[in-house]
Length: 300
Length: 285
Image (cartoon, rainbow over all chains, first blue to last red; front, side, top):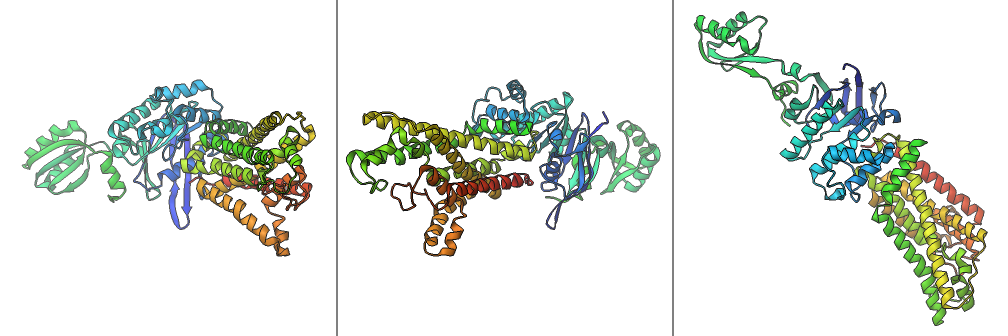
């Protein structure tokens, strides 16, 4: 489970004076869904293109399956959907996949298998240009699945999809992961990453800010206490719960890192200490809070 | 090597299902028929002087239309119309992959970018060979029709003459197709590749040759142009006597000897293929 399939080492790409990707070290382990999270223009696609060998790094290295990225023997074991599906508009979905299967030296049966998995078997004979955006994206995922590759790279697979299409796409990625496939997925949608990813790399302005499991990033639960005086409440809460620390204190609200089952003890202690308690509840931080904390809350 | 074969197979699969390829093949077949046979036959049977037959005796005109003239008949239009169409084909095959994003999809399938580009070039050459074969078949059918209409005996040209013409046709169309392909890859755009290629082959080269007739310095330079070489290759195999010869189709030249012309054509083809392979390995942004 801990075998590392993708590893980048100080990966950097410069376009003239602009640094698109700046010394990124990321690791993707076998069997996980890795979420590569960042706002638009953060450097996600450029990084993925380097992982796929489509773009050469300015400096730094990418190792995929233990070898330098872009080698034919590596690419053959990868599947990818990069920045939107690129297919021949005049060919049917099925013929597009048959073309790609020929590049991989795969039989026709494999094309039928992946068409079936993404739910396009019935529309397989229709021309690609007649497909809806959701169908185009699904065809892109189907192409990425050809030959059952060890690592599947999906760049913003839900981009431009309607809510139903997004839900379908997430279900598809989850089913891939259940089948044991390693998925490297980029997204600017926090909810999406939170829902389907095991580990997350947060990138902004070309720099990888943090790499951790979703649970680690969210940092467990906090107890939110609204009480007067707030300073006294914080003191009491920290004293009552072992290892608790105040993670936020503002506007009369104190947040203490603690498990939900510590709530009764905290309440009792606050009341005994003569603090007026207005609100006490257990909160799970979501990735969005963490993300804005990491990226400095810039709104883009 | 395996990667090149798989890439060529994939490219051939998608190209043979592309209507644009069949439109080009169809237009070329129609042009071969019209300019090679229909107009001359009308001129022969009505005795009228057409632009393509002025000053040519009627018997010679008929001889060129019969099966015995097949070896000349199907290559005459190649330096100009055929070359332009082949270049359009090459530019479309290479350039559209950027507009559609299909290059990036193909490049992540396994074969290296070099192998994928080489396979695509190989597929293009296969299609060029197919176009030359179609030209032979169309011309042969037309000449049989003329023989039947005029009650003439069917005498096929010598196999070596036919083979020479087929080889010349593949060299000429192949060179233009590869130049078009390189333009499509360099400009990363089918429209720009097609446009630049056509302006060059149909306008600039002809202007330079016209100017060259007056200025000797430029004339020497025109001898190095791809169109001059292609026209001279066809001129050599069809036995054209001089560029001013009324019997020659437009674009058919005698500026270079056959050998020198063929070498020039092959050098251009090789250079275009090399440029394509180098450029094809660029970053796909």
